[in-house]
Image (cartoon, rainbow, N blue to C red):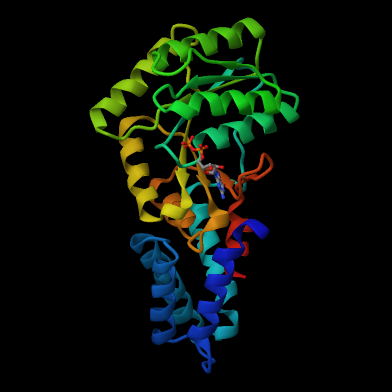
Length: 301
Ligand code: GDP
């Protein structure tokens, strides 16, 4: 898998070094493995869980060969993620009975929020869905323009009132347009400010409230976008955003540019919110539906 090449190479090299000259998985090998997982940004808590699983397995099987280590690691990580949120790779699916399905997208500036919305819009559009975008990130100069460009590229309407306008009013008009157009999906970009928790919460609550004037259950999804190359910063952002609003899905971007794709495992384990998409490049097709088995395979093999 091209997009995850850096993480994969990094991990595989380290793993080979850790087991060189050794035939048996022992305490020393497990210590090295633990360090590697932490270095790959899996996170300390999740790393401990993974090591414990492998230790148990070594204790049970008495002898585990180092040749099998990557296979066992893969199995145990996949099993851990399976226990957390069941189901193989899932995208955001638009239920037949709900129209339009409203997706609010949150995340701090620069994580790839606008790009992810563009890529998502392209996927829905390609699947024959009618899409409307709402440019409610009205605080950043380029955000509105960028979303309009994405809208033109994909061929879907973008509702915008320009910069420094009221984000809630943009969201309101986008949902209104979605209803008028009989759209399947409305995707709302939001401002990525984490300046203070109460401010963020109030802003997102206000956006939700005005949308609910049209559709009581809106937003049906809150997609949090995190930059996977920022490692533990992404974890901190997830902590803040999950406190501020009900996040239902995650997209983790920029995994092509990092050797630390392990952060996806840590975040998935820690927040128990399904990772639905991973970003592996800047182009329109570089948004993959997350499949935990394929992901773990691509990391550890
Ligand atoms: P926003 O401020 O969160 O809306 O971020 P943008 O969507 O403007 O993205 C910021 C930068 O990250 C842009 O240059 C994007 O092309 C880039 N970007 C977004 N997603 C990815 C990704 O998955 N991989 C790479 N390499 N770059 C990405």
